[in-house]
View 1 (cartoon, each protein chain N blue to C red):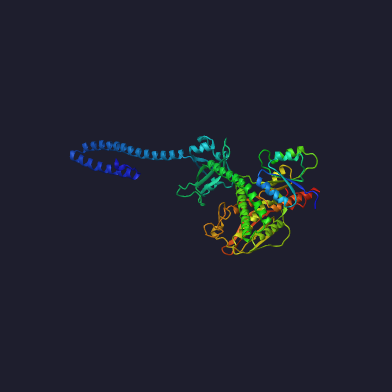
View 2: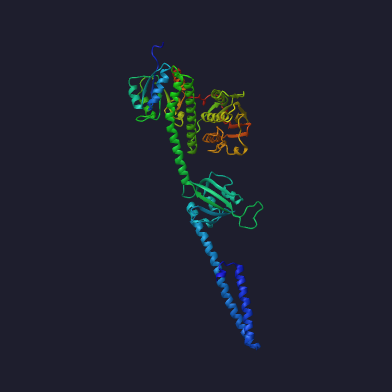
Length: 125
Length: 443
């Protein structure tokens, strides 16, 4: 048994999708918290340090681009691995814009979510 | 004068002959009754002749003037019609000189009428047709071809690019063509602005794009929960429920593919498609896809022929999309199952992928339009597989063409089809392995 499960933050404005992501990742033994936009996520991140952040790009209040800017600015210590998941036309390009190498196009296979999260953790070392 | 209402040269001549005959006959008879003195007769004849010439000259003048007035009126009516047409019309000769034009043409080209008419080759210097073609529609019409609705843009002085449709035809009024190839000296060109149509098309495509985008979000959530349900398999779930979940899953994927096609289609229409080219190995991509599609249809035997690795420099996602579309079609149009053979082969300067099925094939008369947008080869045939939006092959062709490649098909009805596409090998593809490659999920 692992002493502490890996923590993951899911940022998306669709509540049902946030719940689905929680189900998917908790089913794999991760501990998941969610935020409905970038602003709320930043508040959470003041006292919370997840290993991976799954980030939607188009959200009200604070979108993915603004979140990334602010996140990088405020960052002290080790950054979380970010995975961009977006319904935008070119998911890869959106991810590149915010300097993130990992992305997932909506709609996705739930297996791909798990694979990608595990890969991001594997790369962390 | 009612008799002469529709004046023609023959009627004028006939009328003149009749009057002349009656005058000569009756005047000579009257003179012979009046006197028999030769000197008086000569005097009267001289007077009669002079009177005759004057009277008939006046009459001819009246008739011919009337005739010309009719011609002028008819010409004026035609000219007015031409002038009032909203389409710009010009007539050009072989020297590229405009010999006739209407008011709309002066507005379209932004030049004065005399300026256009008096200067040779001014037309070609002033306007540019896009896409540039050689020969362009004007030259083709001068060479004897009739062109309907050639769509492009025109750039005239002081104007931005304006979307236009050109119809052009050689003018065939000469009884004998000037040259043996059937070309005549002149051609009539009609320019029609299609700016409004293009604006509406753009609105439609924008709407399509937004709608497809909005559909994607709920589909993402539905797809995720369907997969979760399948994974969880709640206690007591029976065959019936599992079947229901499988149908949900399959139909969700189908819906996603339709949304994807709509988005890609609108992107193409709006000119927003950008290729994200990287260097990758094509055979392994095909192999992955063949394995994945085999899982979807157990009734078909999918195979990929062995061969060496084929490196290309292309947009991996787009090439995958085309492949998926071709294999998906092969499955869809061979409802009895059977073998689907995929081959990847390097040729001189290009890599070629072929997907061969043993399905229902395509009738010869429907093969030409296969790659046209909205065209569905099996529409109206009553087959179960005659559904779809008719965008798959159009999108595939556009994607392959934008890579500089070709896509084509060979098919025999009831014997199967082979769809093939090629991608040219660029210097980037030949570069030894190193930078530029990427795996499926990395940007």
